[in-house]
Length: 135
Image (cartoon, rainbow, N blue to C red; front, side):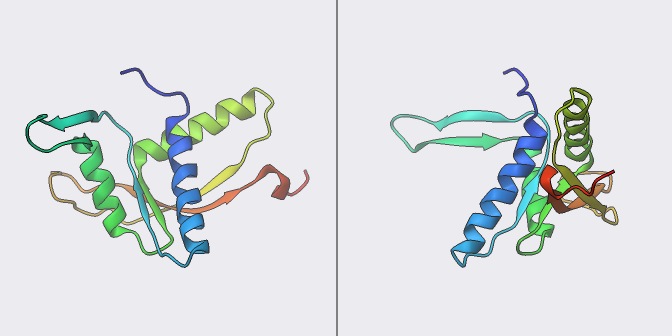
């Protein structure tokens, strides 16, 4: 498929919204967000179990990041952080006042299926344009 414009930024905002909505209902949740190629579609056969599924290295990494997160927290990897910042920068360059996202770099950690330690970031805050200090 083709890339989705502002996918990284949209994914982080969606994760925040889901966590906040669930928290309002008394349900604790956490999220891991990763950027990359995935296979999505029906897996299985019509005679046997057939279900819509997402598979691939990116899906596995997102699951590992989610497992590392605390309740109410979003953890993402370097590619998602970088793309989200680029997307925010492009909006700002167009004269659009945009939200800011604060990231806190974590100590790199190992995950199953990866040879190198993962650089990851906690999403600390989404600040709306209305909350920006003047000047």
